[in-house]
Length: 77
Image (cartoon, rainbow, N blue to C red; front, side, top):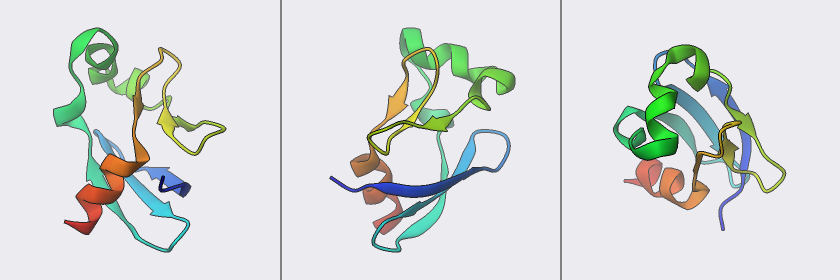
């Protein structure tokens, strides 16, 4: 599993992430915000509550999270 080492909220639904191996870049998470836990994050104030949980995953207080593996794959193309 790829571990996120650092992240920065960049506004809208974009987050810059850096992984432990040095891979980094910006991702737009808007397309992923659907379903019962994703839809509430379309509110910018709710989306801005993103944090890095103890396992190194981007997560929100309502239980929504984004798998580091998916982010890594998106950045690597």
